[in-house]
Length: 264
Image 1 (tube, rainbow, N blue to C red):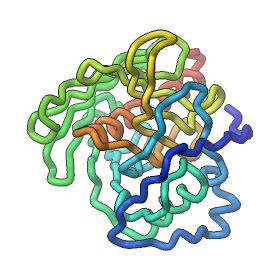
Image 2: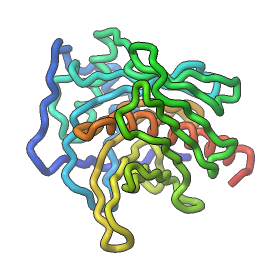
Image 3: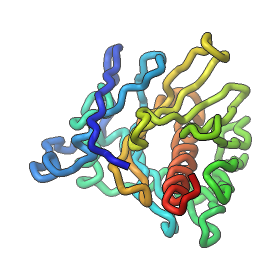
Image 4: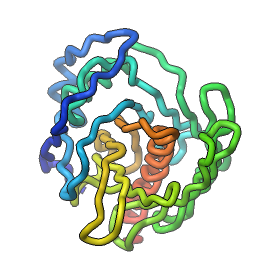
């Protein structure tokens, strides 16, 4: 899939939210990275569907991973980024890279592969507590399950089932507390940027609220991982956004493999 098309940037229309920072890393971009890193040069795509103004409270990094990765780690960079969020712009991506370079982090969540095919994972938190068990289908069109435990998950959190919303569309939907959520690609042609929506109602009258946005480099379809910004004011939503994003990324890699083998 070609990645030469330049995507347009989406800017928040409301006052920006500043992240708290315990340490203020330099956000001066490295000249080599700025000119040669396609992730920095690729602007956030504009969603064709309307949503409420998005004001994220958390910034995470999903470490790049592929089929044979044993542990997928999710890092919380929120307090190490002082750059105001106005979109997943090159400036904000530079701040993310600076935070990753200048600091070492304990993963907020780690997805540990149980079998060699990567169809079963256990997910633990910083204290080593089991947060959820992830069961994944053989193909991208199947349903994946995140079964949360009462040990570490917020009260009332239940199992989530992620499945394609419609055949042929790169969207994944799940229901949480009787509300539908949809992961949707921001571009028809590319899958390097995607958005998690909370959906109220159905059809043309449906109302969407943006919950999270994700951006990654183009790794060729076999490796995924990147920055995730989340409106985590609802209890447990940051965890749901991060873990569901990891599931969607695995399905993305499955689709790439299916295309190469003539599955689509």
